[in-house]
Amino acid sequence: MLLLLLLLLPSADGQTRRVTGEKKADSCECAVDPDLWSFPAGKYEAVLQKVQSCEVSLNSLQEQVNLSSQRLPDIQALVNNLTARLEPHQYLNNLGLYSSLPLRELVDELSQLETNVDAIHSQLNNAQTQKLSREVRKLRTDVDRMERSDAFNMKTVKEKLRYLKNSAESCKTIPTDFRGEDRHCLKGLITSISDPVMTQTSSYGKSYISGSWGQQAQMDSEGQADSYWIQPLVNSHIWGNTLRVYQTNEDFMASANHKDFTFAPSHTHANSIEGPSAVLYGEALYYHCYKSPDVCRYDLKTNAVKRVTLPGTGVGFSNKFPYCYYDCRANSDVDVEADERGLWAIYATVGNHGNIVLSRLLWDSETETLNVTQTWETTLFKKAVSNAFMVCGVMYATRYVDEYREEVFYAFDTATGKHDDSLALPMEKIAKGVASLSYNPVNKQIYMYNDAYLLAYKANF
Ligand SMILES: *[C@@H]1O[C@H](CO)[C@@H](O)[C@H](O)[C@H]1NC(C)=O
Ligand SMILES: *[C@@H]1O[C@H](CO)[C@@H](O)[C@H](O)[C@H]1NC(C)=O
Ligand SMILES: *[C@@H]1O[C@H](CO)[C@@H](O)[C@H](O)[C@H]1NC(C)=O
Image 1 (tube, rainbow, N blue to C red):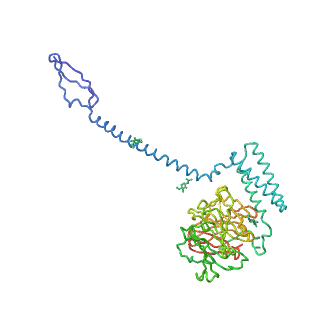
Image 2: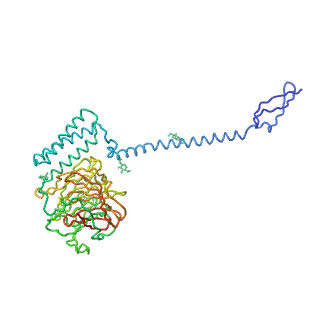
Image 3: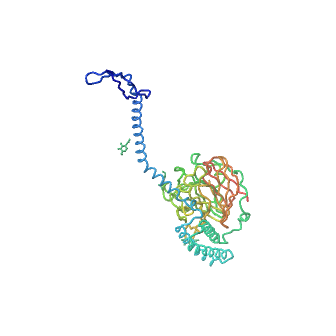
């Protein structure tokens, strides 16, 4: 007897298959052709492979997860580092916003300003100081109101405070400072700068691309009246300890008969120079002292070095706020300059958000001390300018145009606290990098240390 057994086997085409069986004793036998069974071995293998490769990719995923968790602390550190470095620019985020800490700082600054203005006013008592006192009183009323309510524009008040502080510094300029011979200063800003009137290669050779140079900058200096000088940064283009002086223009042009001065025993001594910062003024070289917020004065006659610390919170040095275009000039943080009004330091502070700060320096020959007499805060970000110099108490800043041209684009007047960023005075150059730019009030020339080329220009008023 035959039985029909229905074996429910999935076949390749997904259909069930009919198989014929035969009854033998108590059992039923049927011949099953394994070929006909068509177990989907192919599919099974494919799935098996997928499972295996899935394990492999799971593993590699796990590896990635492991790697990420190892790198996480590194990334965290990087974020922390970036946050720390962005901190000085944080104020950009807070434009017009308020918080209690800046307010407290502001109140402190205002109190300081009130004390200063009172002192200046009682000393001078003129229309300018009266106006200043009135404005400071008005600001005090505004700030007192701010403390009571909590809605105010911090940016506006800070700007007002900066303006008043600058005005107070400008008031301090004692009229006897003005001498007859700088009448050209009354004409206003520089109107143009000539093509180079002198071109010379540094006597130290083309490999010393950073430093400063110029001509004696003090009007009534006795000794080194016509002398030319050059100060090369011989260690890493950052540090140095020597000054070369030529007595005449002929000697300078011929690189002959120089006299070398050593103002520090080594490149790493506290009295050595950092950055292209020097100026020869009278009997002394003034420059930025090694890894410090200080300006040094080296006396060519006595070899004595005196110093003063620049004012401000977080004075930048050791490459914190150098001059830059898209490259930065290494460690050009503090720039010492001379003009008709005397000596200046151009630098930047964290307190002024990395913007340029100007301090007026004075050598007191009686007490033999180097003093800072006044300080102005600008809104010009130092790392956004390629260099700067002083003329008639006005700071001029340059920007990089291309390999052969710089442009004076900005002026800040310490007499008024006002600035003008619409200037466009071109300056030709030979090489790309400008290490230093200094004006000389004796002959109204501007000196550029252009990598290792020494260029001089005439300033026209
Ligand atoms: C991931 O890290 C765990 C624990 O550290 C470890 O047991 C595992 O083997 C690691 N896996 C891979 C794929 O590296
Ligand atoms: C951040 O990293 C730079 C370069 O790696 C380093 O010079 C600097 O000191 C770091 N700053 C901080 C605050 O950790
Ligand atoms: C310079 O500073 C010294 C020391 O603080 C002081 O005695 C002297 O009077 C100051 N000189 C001037 C001109 O301000």
